[in-house]
Amino acid sequence: MAASVAKKNLFFQLQCHIRYTWTVVLLLVLLPVLLQGQEPEETCKSDSDEGCGCAATSRDKAASYSKPAEGEGGAATSNSDKKSSETEGGSATTATRTNQMVFVRGGEFTMGTDAVRFPQDGEGPARRVRVDSFYADVYEVSNAEFEIFVKDAGFVTEAEKFQDSFVLENIISEQVKREITQAVAGAPWWLPVPGADWRHPEGPDSDISSRMDHPVVHVSWNDAVAYCTWAGKRLPTEAEWEYASRGGLENRLYPWGNNPMPKGEHRMNIWQGKFPEENTEEDGYYSTAPVTSYKPNKFGLYNTAGNVWEWVSDWLSVRHTKELQVNPKGPASSATNDKVKKGGSYMCHEDYCYRYRNAARSQNTPDSSASNLGFRCFADKLPQGVGEVKVVEL
Ligand SMILES: [Ca+2]
Ligand SMILES: [Ca+2]
Image (cartoon, rainbow, N blue to C red; front, top):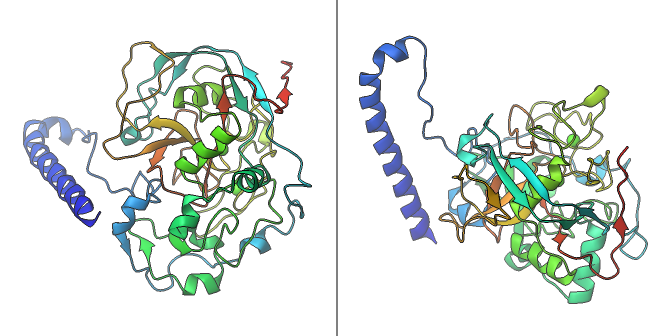
C-alpha cells in the first residue's frame, strides 16, 4: 500500500509540476488579461483546501497521517455530555421502527449544477437525467435498525475488523485522545480512534444507548451494501438519491428550495459557528440528530441534506456527459477506488465544506468509515414487512 501511495504522490507532484509549467507559459501569454484582474481557474490544491478534508477519512489515505500538533483543536467534550437533552434510552426492541419507505414516481430532472462550488468534486455540469420509479427509505438507517440486522445476521462491520475508525476530534474524550498518536495531514480534526465503531461512535468509552434513533455511523460502503441486501433493499444510485433529495423541485440548492432557513426555521443538521473550534448548535445538535428530526421534503424524505453523509452505489467519476442519461449507474470503476457519498453532514459549514446542497458530492474508499458517514436504502419493490409512507401533497 505504501508503494501505491508513493506512486500516487509522485503522480500528483508530476501533475502539479506539469500544471506549474503550463501556468508559467499561460501567464506569459495571458499577462495582459491577468493584469486586468482575472485569475487562473484551477490550481493544485490539497485535500484540505477547498476539499476540506471530506475525503480524508479514506483508509488508503492512512499513509498521510502525521503526529497531531500539541494542543491542536478545540476542547474535547464527551459526546454523552452533549447529548444530555436528547432522546433517552432504549434498545432496538423498544425503539420505534424507522425502516419505512416511500414510493417515488420516476421522472426526468436536472442533476448536478452549472453553479459549481467545488469543480474538483464533479458537481457540474447540470444535465438531464431520467430515472424509473423506486421506493426510498424515509430516514437514514438508525442505530436501532442496524442493531436488528447485526443481531439477525451476526454481522461484523469493517471498522470492527480494522479495529479503528475516524472520529471528529472535538467529540472524543480526553482519555481516548491521549492514547492517539496520529492525525490526518491537512485535516487534523479527524483522528483514527482505536475501538471506534457503530456501537462506540467516539471510541471505547462511548455507547449508543441514548442514541438508538440516531443514524448509524462508522459503516463502510461494504457494510451498507450488506445491510441493504439483508433488508431486501439496495443502495440508491447517485441519480436516484439526488432525484429523491430534490423532491420534485428543479434547480434548487436544498431539498426544500434555495433558502437555507425558510422563515428562520432550521431544516437540517449542519454546523453553526467557526469550524472546527466552535459549534453553537443553533440547529439543536452538536453531532448527529435523530433520523426523524426536522421537516421532510415533498417526497417525504428526512435529512437527505446534513446529519450524516449517505453512501450511494456509484463509483466516483468527476466528468459527466451533458447528454440525457436514463437510469445512470456511474462508471464501471474508479481510478481512485472511491465510492460517491451525498448530502453532507453535521460537520458541514458554508465556509468550510458547503456540501449539504443537492448537487454536492464527495467520496471515500468502500472500506472507509467515519463518525459522520451513514446511509439509507432504496428498493425496486416494497420489501415484505416494511411499512409504506403515503405522502399527501398539500
Ligand atoms: Ca448541528
Ligand atoms: Ca443525510
